[in-house]
Image (cartoon, rainbow, N blue to C red; front, side, top):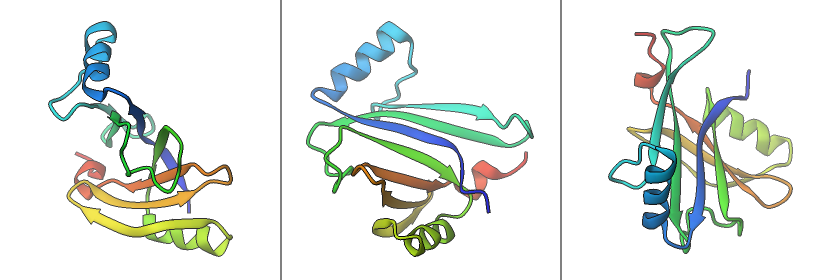
Amino acid sequence: MKRVTGIGGIFFKARNHAALSTWYRDRLGIPVEEWGGATFHWRDEADPRRRGTTVWSPFKADTKHFAPSEREFMVNFRVDDVRTLLAQLKAEGCTVVGDVQESEYGVFGWVMDPEGNKIELWQPPASELDKT
């Protein structure tokens, strides 16, 4: 099974996430949405009918979303099967964090890397993977 299929998102803490989002929008042209981040849409190079997204999002400096990591960032990796990958990682001695969560945005799970960075694993919803 292929493990990571791409980067689903880049998340980082900001002292003033609203002002920082505005700076990125105004200075770099990032298409910041009402929720404060941006979603980049793309097509798979090997199969252009397959759609995908990558999210860029600053978080409030005091967010607990990255815990137990104390780092200022978290990378979200796209995967085909979160539950299977987490089971494999756990069997290999990796620290799996929290419970798998499922929503209209897909399936999410977390693992810690050896340096204490929390890594988010994201299985996109079927609607994103449909070849339309």
